[in-house]
Length: 480
Image 1 (cartoon, rainbow, N blue to C red):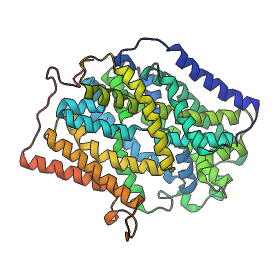
Image 2 (cartoon, rainbow, N blue to C red):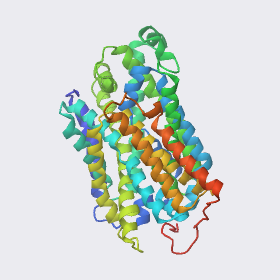
Image 3 (cartoon, rainbow, N blue to C red):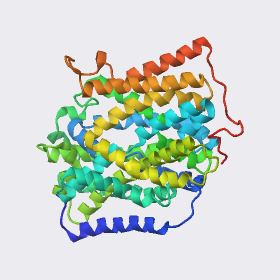
Image 4 (tube, rainbow, N blue to C red):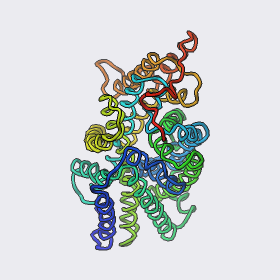
C-alpha cells in the first residue's frame, strides 16, 4: 500500500490540481474541428516528441512484470520490435501522412476506397484505440496505492484520465503530455539512482539474478518472441502515430519527431528494464510480478522520492489513456456519428467527440474487467486489428497495390473475423478442443495470411482501384 507520508500525498494532490486547472481553463471556450481534433496542425517538434513518447509508453506495469520474469528479454519484446515499426513509419508514412492533411485513418480509407472501408476502418480503429490495457494498469496502480478492490479503481482510472481533455481536445492532450513526459523520466531516474547507491551496480545484479535474465530470450522459445515483431507492425497503423503526424506543424516535424522519439524510447527502456532487473533481485519471492515496480518503490525510496516515483508511473499510464481514449472518442464522433449522419459541416464534430469520450471510457472499463491481463490485451487486440488495417492503409498512402473498394472491405472484414476467431477459440475452447490456437498458428499470422491472399487475388485478376484523392465533395478530403 502507498506510503502515508504527507509529502507523497502532497505531490499527488498537486498533480490532480494541475489536471483540474487544465479542464477549468477550457470551459466554454469555442473549438473548431481543426483545433479540437488535430490542435490546429501547429504541433512543434519538442511538443511532438513529448506527446508521442509519453503516449506510446503506457504499459509501465506490464514492462515491470515482464522484466521481473524474463530480464533483458523485455527490451527484445517490447522495445526493439516497436523501434523498427516506428522507424518504418518515419521512413514510409510520416511525411506522406502530414502532406495528406486529413484527420484520421478512416479519412485516408474514405479518400482512396470509399464509405464501406472507411466505416469498417473506423470500427477497427475504435477497437484498437480503446485504452483497456492502460485503464487496467492505472486501476491496478490505484488499487495498490489505496488498498481498494480493483473494480472501483478501474472505473476511477477511466474517468480521471479523460475528464481534463473534455474541453480542449488534442491541444490539452499535447499540453499535459509534455508535463507527463518530464515526470516519467524524472521518477525512473531517481529510482535507478537510489537502487545503484543502495545495492551496487551490475555486479549485484549478476550475483542476484538467474542466468537466463541476461540472455536475449529470457528462457522463452524463440517463436514467443518472434510473434511480437509481427504484432509491432501495428505501429504502422497505430492511430496515435497518425494523429500526431496529421497534427504536426509540417511534414519535416512529423518525420523527425518520430526519429527523435525512438531515441527517447531507447533511453526510457533502459531505465525501466534496469529497474525491473533490480525488482527481481531485491524481491525474488514477489507473489504477483505485476506489482514489481510499486513494491520495489515501497521498500527502496524515502518519502517524497516515493511519491515522485508513483507520480511517474501514474503520468506514464495517464498520458496513454488520455491519448488513445481521445482517439477512440474521435473515431466515434467523427468517423462514425458524423459520417453516418452525412453532415456537410464540421461544427458538430467536437460535440460528437465529447460524447464519444464517455463511450470510450465505458468500453475500456468493460474490456479491462473482462480480461484482467495487460500483456494479454496487448497481444489479442494487436493480433486482431493489425491484419485488418495494415494492407489497406499502406497501399492507400503509398499509392501502390490498391484493390477495389468491395475487395478492400471484404479483406478487412475477413482478416478481422479470422484473427478474432483464433483468439476466441483459445479463450473459449469448444468441447473436445485440445487447447491452444487452431493449427498452433498465432492469430496475427492467420489474419495477415487471409488479408494478403485476398489482395493477391485482386492483383492477379486486375481488380485494382483508382485513387479518389482530389475528387470534389468526397468525404475525408478535408483541406488543411
